Image (cartoon, rainbow, N blue to C red; front, top):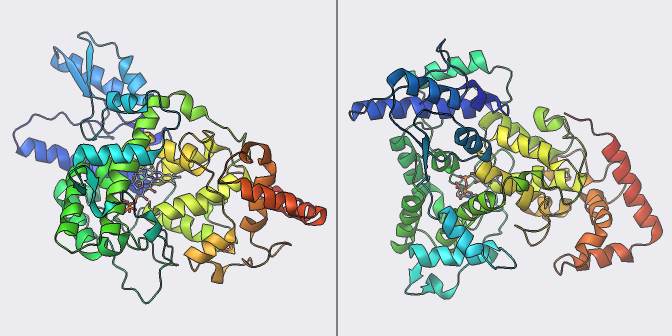
Length: 477
Ligand SMILES: Cc1cc2nc3c(=O)[nH]c(=O)nc-3n(C[C@H](O)[C@H](O)[C@H](O)COP(=O)(O)OP(=O)(O)OC[C@H]3O[C@@H](n4cnc5c(N)ncnc54)[C@H](O)[C@@H]3O)c2cc1C
Ligand code: SF4
């Protein structure tokens, strides 16, 4: 196992993300040694460290006279290519990563010959395959998807739980010092580190979620509240993605809560869909479509990423809140990523590749196989609709309905025009107008195009000039 400069810096990952991964690695190495394995562990500050994974594999293979080199397929195309190009004396065997439920071949088989690769159908296939929430061949509750029940705004009267926090032990403290020393110029706060770093920690965090938050997970899945960074979300993606939790075990634990009458079906189904549906599906799309997928820019967006994605210095209260908590926690929940930072970027025509590098850097759970399709496909529609059936475009009214951010904002969510109007309001129509030809044929967007066409010329001109004024004031990162 090797802590290497190239993996920590090919994008400048959030300090907490690097600390989490290095500490989880060091803990795992200790567990393996305690179980009798021989582990060669190369630390970041080892003077011999070549700085790349391929360099460390070659160095060690030579040092110990390895007869064969076996690796697990990495989660990023970039690294898979790097390892495939390794010139070891004995050749290199790459084994599939068995921490997923669908193999590449299985996803390809599912996708073959389909006109549209919609997640919903893949999800049904995965429900049948795993038997999760199934009664024979039928879905529990005679319905595959309870998403329409999962759109309630949250209120402050609710008792909102917090994720389980872990005090750093000596291993983590050492890593925190190392990260402060080597990666001090990276984005993000390092203080108040509370992530679990072992499998036992991750299991405890999951168990805590099951009892404190799962029952409301579905109802408030799309809600946002000021100062509430986690609401009823599980905060387990970082554990799942680095291998401390197993996806099927996690889903079975959630199903058991439903079967025991401790969680409603809309919560259990909603959660399980995110994992055996979305999580497996985006991974399938990634490996099916790379490397071209990374270059997609169907909407031709070229504006540089605004500097406030790094500083949080903006008058837009919703964006300020999401980016501030991202800096503190290396975490934002799905709807904050999708409908606040994501929607704003799409409406403003931000270059999807700059945005992709931002999402990849700032979240503790971010690895390209999962982050890229979520950014390029789901959030930016930059793949032209391969992943999402319509662009996630919305005006300020959506954020106002699902959150209490607008009350604190320098802009007025009710105002449609002028310097005090919520920028989401005019940027939304500007987006519809800019992409009119592309989206008018989409049945889910056609009504919006007709509404734009029905605006009188003065209203259209006002939207254009408000948008141009606002966009020209954005300064790049
Ligand atoms: C622009 C954008 C970028 C994203 N980047 C990442 C990323 O780098 N890594 C990542 O794991 N997720 C990413 N997501 C998906 C999702 O936002 C996170 O998985 C989720 O916020 C993690 O928090 P949680 O564990 O509290 O999730 P919960 O809301 O509690 O959901 C439970 C689990 O379901 C899975 N899940 C939920 N939604 C998705 C999804 N769309 N794709 C894949 N898995 C999902 C996760 O494993 C998550 O832990 C991104 C979403 C968007 C819109
Ligand atoms: S008014 Fe607009 S910019 Fe301000 S918080 Fe609401 S949605 Fe965000």
